[in-house]
Each structure stands twice: as structure tokens, then as C-alpha cells.
Image 1 (cartoon, helix red, strand yellow):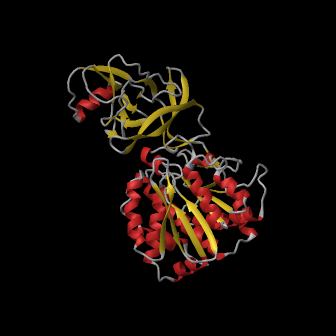
Image 2: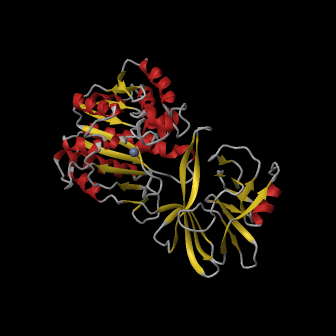
Image 3: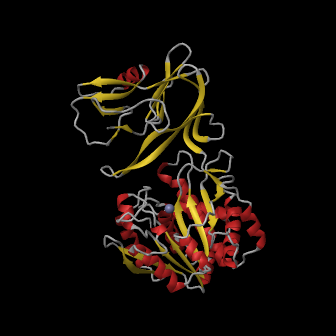
Length: 463
Ligand SMILES: [Zn+2]
């Protein structure tokens, strides 16, 4: 089945599901979409069972081909990219119902998709289900009702292909290229010995072809996921039952607000993989391409400041990671910026890197505040020029562990909040040039360029 990856990629903007603008996708967000698509007789939506907390989990089936494909998303509740891309895909096939490519695809395959296998985890924005089980470590015991649903549907349809759809941590690069991984693939192993069964070779071939096509759009940003065997995972179990299992992990793209570009890439990848499966041609030449896909390497950081002088005499690089944390009250993602590592970081790369040769680094200062703070820009820059990264407030009422919207940390007076520059601590420090002026400050792992009045702080810390 011949297709142009560029056409699919470009089609995205016209079919994008506009009701899912955020990377936080919860059960209530997908219910109206299921109702909308239920009106189409070619989209069969069924209740497949209930989550621990009693939410109905649905399966969506399209196509009438002999080749059975099973896919599921958000088995980890905070990994929404595949769910969003699936609803984009439903819009795509509805819009293109009469299109030759789409009708051929749906003649060849029957796709059963479980969008949001873990609605309770999605509600809490966590990987785990309501009782704290990682569903992808429950394939043998089937303790969770969500696991039972996936296992039962697999046994019912006996899919030739299984698509296991996730989001990986945001700090992978493609081998040591310094380029962040945007998509990674794995032809999941059926056993400890990474045996290349016939089913696995088919998965490898489909990935090899999809990789080649996708490389026209995001060259150098695609990697091969670790093939270590995990006996408790669904993919590995389905592979052992001779399904061709393809893991697709969404990664990251620089400055990608709400993961929108990654979502577009993921939609393109998913659609291209289905079209490749439907071609029923799985040549060995594409298996070889699969085997040459560079490895997914966890060597990315969010921010690296290179060649700074630490404690007035040590020349080091400082590496920072910003850990996403779900802010329930505001239903948004905020960050905890921490020093991940320091020293020789020549083997790491980062989304933002600066050469700070000639700068000396000092731990951030604290200042006491008793009054309501009026944050004019002038006042702010007066504070940060003095190296102040954190305000200690005596009488401010705020929720504990809440995050600050102003670009300074806010802590209760006397609170133990170390600003020591050391791995594991929050990244709060300032950088002085050779004339002793503070040109840069880092607040909660975000850089403020004082010379150009450029504040990049998304959120600071409140404790
Ligand atoms: Zn996952």
C-alpha cells in the first residue's frame, strides 16, 4: 500500500481534534468524542468493562479487514499523546472515508483501539491505576480490572499485530547525537533471549519501513527503545503469544507547547504504521533497517551551563532537569527544577545550553518579606541582581507545596530550603561576570538573563 508520509503529516492540521488542546487528557475529555463518533455506523464503540473506580472503559473498532490489529493508549494515566493522536486519526478516517487509501486500509485491517485503558490514573495524572498498580506490570497476575479487559480483548480478537502506545521520559537522545528522541520504537521481545520469532520479524519490518518514511520528516530524531525482557509487561506477553508487538513511545521536541508537534508526529507515525501493516509486505530488508535504528539513550537534560567557576576555583558544567509535576488545583503541569549532575558533562546534551566561560556561580540568596509584594519588573530585577532567588514570607497564606507564579521561590520563614549547589537540590543560583555583576540567575532550574531582561521562569517553588 503506497502512501506519502508528507501527505499524512500535512493532513494533520485539517483533522486535528480541537477539543484536546492540552497534554492533560482525562476521562471527561474523551466521553463527548466517543459520543460524536458513535453516530458514524462505521465506528463501533463498545463498553469493554470498568476501571477500579467504576469508569466504563471503551473499545473502538474500525475497518472490516481480516487482519486484526489491537491498540491501546494511556495504560499509564499521564501518557496522553496516543489518545490525542487516536482521536485525530478517527477524524482523519471520517473525513477521508471515500478516499482510496483510507478505504483500502479499512478493507484490509480491523483495528480495535482502547483509548485510555487507565481512566483513574488519568484523573490523578499518574502512571498507576487507582490502587497504585502499574497496569503494564500486571499482565501475568491480572489483579486489576483494567488488565483483565486488555487480556480478554486480546484473547477475543487474537490480533496479528498489537500496538502498545506510550510517552517516554523527556530526557532521551538518539544515541550520542545530542538530538532529543521524538519517537522511539520497539519490536517487543517474546523472551529473555530476544528471539526473533516470525511474529517479531514482522514487527521489526513494519518498524523499519515506518522509520524510513518518518525519517523524511524528522531525520535524526527517531530511536530504538531498549529490548530488555519484562515478563510482567503486556507487550512481552502478547509477543510470547505470537502477536507482532510494536511499542511506540512519544518523546519530546524543543519548545513544544502542549506537546502539539509531538502529537502531529505521533499521528503520522501511527497512521504510517497501520498502512504498512495493511500492505502485508514485511520484507527482511526492512528488518535490517530496524536493526540499524540508533538506540534511545537517556543523556538529555533540560539546561546545561558549561564552564562555570564553582566555589571560586572549580571549572564545571551544571546540568539541570525540570521534573513535571501535576498541579491539581490549576489542572496544569508545573516543574521542579533540580541539579541533576555537575562536573564534566561533555557526554550530555540539553534542550538549552549556554557557555558560561568567565562566570562564577554562587548559591541563591534568600530575603525576608513581611508585606504584600507588588511585583513590578523593576523591583524584580533589583532583587535578582542581588542574587536573590527566594523570598521568605512570614504572614502569607498559601497552600503548602503549591507553586509560585512569580519568578522567585516563596517559602515560609524558617523553612528548611537548601540552595546549596549540589546534585538533587533545587537549582537556585546566580552567575557573576568578571566585574562582579550578576548577569544571569537560575530560579527553580529556569534561566533569567538579566542583561536582556529575559525571564524564562515558568514556575518557581512555594514551600
Ligand atoms: Zn508508559
